[in-house]
Amino acid sequence: MYILGISAYYHDSAACIIKNGEILAAAQEERFSRMKHDHRFPSHAINFCLQYAGIKSTDLDLVAFYDKPFLKFERLLETYLSFAPVGIKSFIKAMPLWIKEKLWMKDLIKNELGYEGKIIFPEHHESHAASAFFPSPFNEAAILTMDGVGEWTTSSYGVGKGNSIELIADIKFPHSLGLLYSAFTYYTGFKVNSGEYKVMGLAPYGEPKYKKLIYDHLIDVKDDGSFRMNMEYFNYCAGLTMTNNKFHKLFGGPPRIPETNLTQKDMDLARSLQEVTEEIVMKMGNHVYKETGLKNLVLAGGVALNCVANGKLLKEGPFENIWIQPAAGDAGGALGAALIGWYNYFGNPRTADEKSDSQFGSYLGPEFDDDKIQTFIRSKNLIAVKLEENELIKTVSEMIEHEKVIGWFDGRMEFGPRALGARSIIGDARSAKMQSLMNIKIKFREGFRPFAPSVNFEKVGDYFEIEKESPYMLLVADVKKERRIAMTGDEEKLWGIDKLNVVRSDLPAITHVDYSARLQTVHKETNPRYHKLIEQFEKNTGCAVIINTSFNVRGEPIVCTPEDAYKCFMRTNIDYLVLGNFLLSKDDQKPLEQDVDWKKEFALD
Image 1: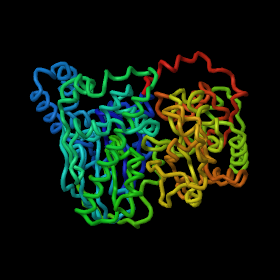
Image 2: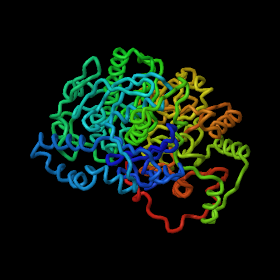
Image 3: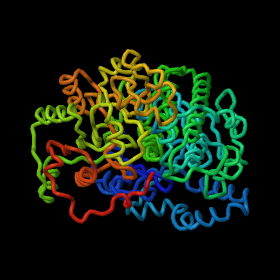
Image 4: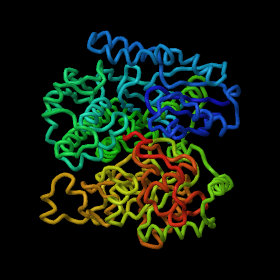
């Protein structure tokens, strides 16, 4: 039995296919279209899923779409009417697409797929909840979902047991933790639904100077984590911006113009917002634990990508175990919808072993064997050397040791926003210059942006204050105290971005200014070659940690194909490229012929 899940038309469109309950394939549309956060109908992702499964659309037993378009339309109409005539510009901009496409989703799906079978439409947060619980290792768990908005719901909690999920309570639009975070993302000059993680990364450079203002004027939070926002300060209900003049007056001026210099104010705003977010998530978690009494918690929704809040909830919260959907945003809704079809619509039983999830490390995208890679290499007349695996591992490990930067393209592409050792740029975490080098000369992005460490799971406790798995890079943990380097008196006096170049541990490239790191634990069972590489690096250097950042430049989706990887390699200062078993040196390659101005090709995030 085959079920296709689809998410589309908000951001991060995606498709997923499951066979008899097993997740076969899943991917975001952006990886194929090369348009970051592509919201359009995921035709390419659907084609990939069907091809991977070896079937045609007529072989599908069910199609599941991740939300209810008519309920979402109802919310938009009610909101516009409530704020009329203020929202007329936003209304005029939104309505044509709804009238033409979004309201007729069933017909659109049937026409796009050539499919005449059953289509189901779970609610948005039900899809999030399903994506969090059903692939998790747990037979029973509390569920917490948090995002911008679905149809009406912005946060919900419930319980998953066996093959069923039940949502117990929710918070409704316009009161939204995700939209509060997006409002500050907009105000600090970053792109909404794209730059929120930058705000999180900027927060440690600031002080929580504006936290009281946020609590006094913007949001009223109760002990159970429920909240109401003062909509007098926000514009997202009816306007084309997130904040209004009253918000700007409260915080002392207009929004930062994108791409202008960051100020201490921006850092302090980020820190204040991040602390408010963490406190709300902690209150929500405590309430959900009190109401359910369950030791396990699963998370999904865009706010669940806030790995700092996740790490705090795991470390200081009441739950013994937390599992977070790696594609926690809207892309994961495609997976959740498909699993609702399998477990709820068809009523199939579910078993979990309490140890391993069923998402296979989230390596669910396209893969390219050596024959396909060699065909690409020959088609472009590239100079490459094919190496046996052990030789490749030893060679690349030595290159990392000598501070070379490697484009690592191997196996199936990751599903979700994080590169997890299949489409990664890797380097030496011990190098004090590596963060600046990789940010500015390879990623072409802001120098403050932190890099993540990949560490083999067996060794995680040697480097970080955590003993739990973090396979999807969705938890932040502190670097071990014995690995930290105390700041000098002069360094203690530094403010903001001046803190960036202070060496804080024996792993300076991945240690953030507050001694934390957003870590990925690497597991032999899900990515044996990447695990083997880190193992070899440890044999060479005594260090079981390397840098892992996504294989792309700023504004570009993570690379999908060998050609995507080669273009990124040639457009940047990456030293070597690994494509499967093939190794390419930058020095051996000719410049790209007739290359476009790629910095204009990708919209800045």
